Amino acid sequence: MTTLEDFAARLDLTENGERDFAATAELPEDLSVFAGHFPGNPILPGVVYIFIAERLIDRFSGERFTLKQLKRSKFYQPSLPGRVMKIDGHLERNAAEPRSVVAGVVFSDGDGRKICSLKMILEK
Image (cartoon, rainbow, N blue to C red; front, side, top):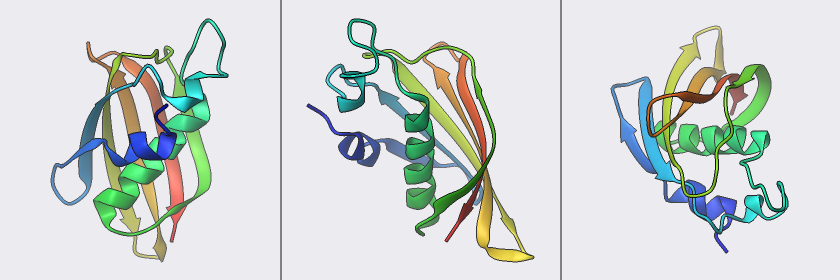
């Protein structure tokens, strides 16, 4: 069974400038979070999008951040086992609060349709 930590660590991260990043991944059929959400009809739990976004932001920035506030989350469609997911992120640093960043992260399916969008404030 693939753990969520292992899955997030293997995401293929691409830097697109100083503030933008992207990643793609296929959701493993044996990803541990699918086991109980929901039996017989597995979908990726909403909190997993936040977890994945945090881990990608940490890797992209080279710093460790923790979610301070979820400003917005919108879910458009479920993510299913075996499906390809594309992730695009943008970070903004705030000169007035140097220990925090504002991140926008959009998850899309293989056809480019939005799955989930997040706006988060994270803190070191």
